[in-house]
Length: 621
Image 1 (tube, rainbow, N blue to C red):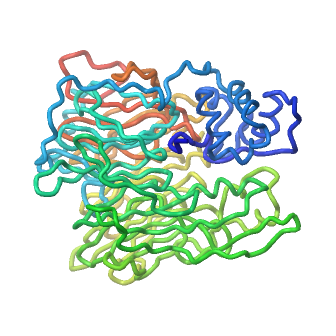
Image 2 (spheres, rainbow, N blue to C red):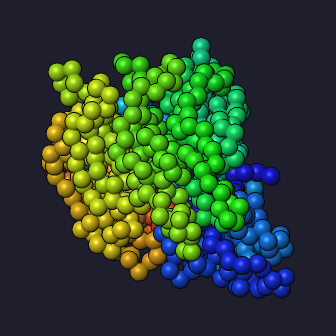
């Protein structure tokens, strides 16, 4: 059984009713099991029935038989689970490509990967630097604002069996390495999209891989992680594994953040999907503990592991026998920021799952790079214990009464110099607040600034970008203000030394508000290069901004169908998740985010024009 295809239909739950009858129709099963959360008015974070209809029935069947939703549909049995899947999907069983039936379009005459590519144009991991600025220098980007007018769509790649494509590729030595949201790591030609290889993973891959030169002139190595909690070291030339293995024993452990490589050590952070199971009346919540792991990059052997929350114990047992465990949670969703000068790494954390929420939740935590010992913690939101039970209709009132506001840190911190020997960590929170703290004074506050109302899917979500003196911050607020362009979305430029606003560009009014999942929110991680700032939107547009003025200087509407190089039917949708990769004059990004946006499954590659007319859907201002 391949765990890589057990992806949730929504972000995490279906709402269950009473026992099923042996002759219950698929429509009745959907209404009883799924309808409360996924019906005409889906609750936040749940995929609508219309969006689920775009999924393949095989995908739905796997999800309700062996995936996250199995706990709700177990009473149906396999025959009626399949009937339900076929009733929900408008795709005929066996008619659409899936990860199991995918046929790669191989490169006809592949050139060997140059092991010296580390000195050439590249993007590896979450950011080109350890400070996590997401700034691509001019010599690696090969792209200026004036070049945007000459870009055209050169190829598109479809992810089979997926409705979400919020991934960011790495580019190294003329090859593009990208994870599949339905599982697997692909190695593609960066200029044509043809495939060199695909490696099957245990779970979906959301994080950008890290690519590093091989030892003593050997083949480069691709380091990847997946949502099943596994880490992999792959030969970049062939895709063969050098080592692989799970990084946590908890069955719901997940790794969503890119690994970080430094001086032979690979640093990982772990989160989990357990908060999704809390909505089930049959699940004893919760026992996952967020952690940070250091591995020997050559062998995969563990050097240290530090848990960010103590050992959970039974907090109480209800009259129905259901046990509540605590403390729990405190997953880390974003790549660590390394500070070799101080011998420290900084991770941001999410909320606790069950009370009491520890001081390491909704926090920036500094750890020793050599030992993993926690040096200090800056907590932005105390007492934030939150799971999906908090917003599930009919949930236990006692559970709801203990719920916090769900104000994780969903993005990595950025380390910057202030001058005079002073430094600052910039931490953006879902609350809509940007925090500037001093890493050399145990996280002492330098300044804070509220940029938006924030909320469950709000504030500063996936990431922001920075130059030495300025930080550029896209705003999400997807659910809270999705029909109000003046609030949801938009981009801020702030002066790093004091947080002063240099400019603020509101989000353009969405052109698709009649489409479920469309909004003005801009949760995608920003990417910055000299003279150009990229920020995608939940309305399906990828925009480039002038970093000096905030003016939009390039706009591509991606929500359409594409002819792909691998023959997989593909469509664009909401843009969320990992940001744009810019290498050697090429621009790469994914479109489609079906969990609470417009579904899609396409990776797009824009390159220098071959003298073809500019597509009408691309506007240069």
